[in-house]
Length: 155
Ligand SMILES: CC(C)(COP(=O)(O)OP(=O)(O)OC[C@H]1O[C@@H](n2cnc3c(N)ncnc32)[C@H](O)[C@@H]1OP(=O)(O)O)[C@@H](O)C(=O)NCCC(=O)NCCS
Image 1: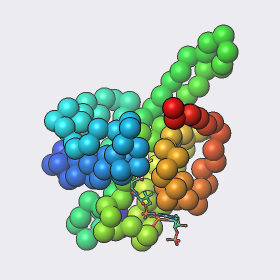
Image 2: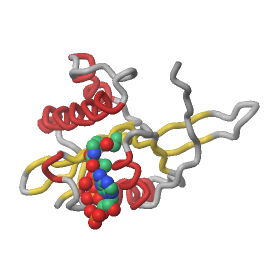
Image 3: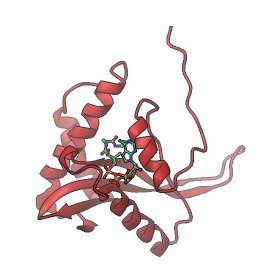
Image 4: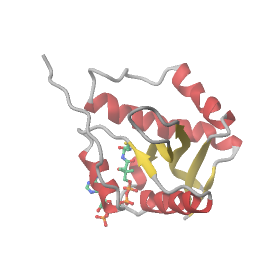
């Protein structure tokens, strides 16, 4: 398996995987997520591609793009409550259903960790939805720890 940055002609395939994540979110939190994969969501891949603070990472197995991640350099300036925060955020992350439990996501995280270290980041963050217990088990398996929670009461 090869993990590397995406090429221009691979973005349609990345969008197929982006739709898979969206479908997972729609199924798990239908009160929040819109079903389908509208043009605005599809075309957002071009915004990501053109943003110097974001990179699209892909995993390739047998010439097939089987997983991807969007990584995003975030800088939040100091404010009265908090110190400056500078970190690498994983904005989107998915492995094709047909390629799961083969270590693809673990390889993507390993690539992202190496990239973060090489580029002077000391912290990688991500956020996820509580219903997604499979993703939680995966993130914990590669060393992520929960440091903050969102809570709700449905009325
Ligand atoms: C979560 C996801 C990225 C994991 O990808 P993957 O390539 O299957 O993960 P790996 O094969 O590297 O898994 C490594 C370890 O993580 C854990 N793990 C992975 N998926 C798991 C699951 N669904 N349930 C429980 N543990 C899981 C296991 O310990 C696994 O090791 P094992 O297979 O030897 O038991 C993939 O299931 C996915 O894309 N899900 C849908 C999209 C999604 O939820 N994205 C995250 C949005 S925040």
